[in-house]
Length: 380
Image 1 (spheres, one colour):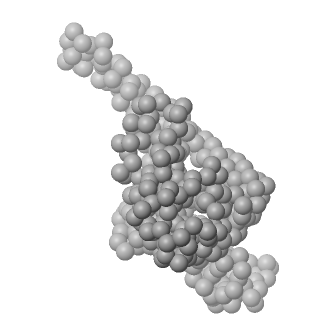
Image 2 (cartoon, rainbow, N blue to C red; image 1 turned 30 degrees about the vertical axis):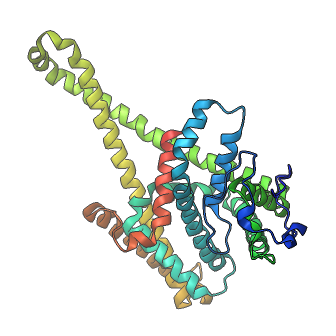
Image 3 (tube, one colour; image 1 turned 180 degrees about the vertical axis):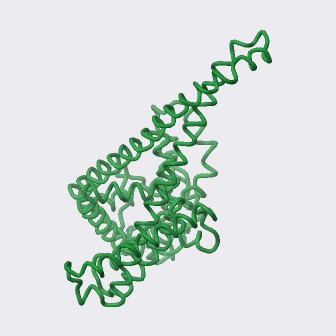
């Protein structure tokens, strides 16, 4: 007997009446709809991105309007889909856990000491390793200036929707894992494509559409505004570098052209373009180095500010309050911030700003975010 295949993409969760007719699972033939049996086994009580990705590519492969060369590419890349999906899941879980840990500490103020220690740790990283997070620090500063609170609200909205989907998914997994009288689970008879359809229908039924759309629109608008801000800063550095290169070029033309033209002989027409290109490259590199030093000093001084803020919180100085007329105390605090910033800048210039083991493991999400921002800025 063949299992009935419905046209509805959502797999029904109710027990089938045919479960009681005593049929053995081996007697069930493979559906004649072109769908494939599950290729990824179930692990744990979580939505499986591997199965969802495999189901998505199965659907693409079965689409009639899909060009043949695209289908060949899909067929070639399918063996790598589970590994890629697992890698993306690991990154998503890492950022999710990081957000789940940091946001309650920052916004709920449940433990001021933990919050102060977290701020002090961020300040120390910025003081001594700020150069490794050049793009990330620039993005945070741009967000802080252009209205971070709205973006934070949108992120919290998405987080709440994700938690609701996660809770519903756990209950749905329990229903799918339940077995009938023959010991078969509902998920056992699902293809990867059926699993994809079922989970997509689950997500669409749980999330709040308008809230999610507004949050995604707001986050994307703020993100591209930040990218544009960073691009402008780098464009300024490039413009300054080209101007410096032109000044180098004037000096090089006077001192080197005649000797190099004699050296190149019949290829002397290449001398001036090569000198121009090299001088501008040197100017851009010099301007970029100045920009990086400026960024390192900014991160070091900002880190010093965070360290002094954390010290004030832990020591109770801010609870007591500082009178604005007590200029001596304020001057000492600001001088300490500046001193910490100078020490951090000298340290980064002298020893570099690379993050070494085991700190690079702890800061892996921030390093990945900085690298991704650099890629996006370079490609945009």
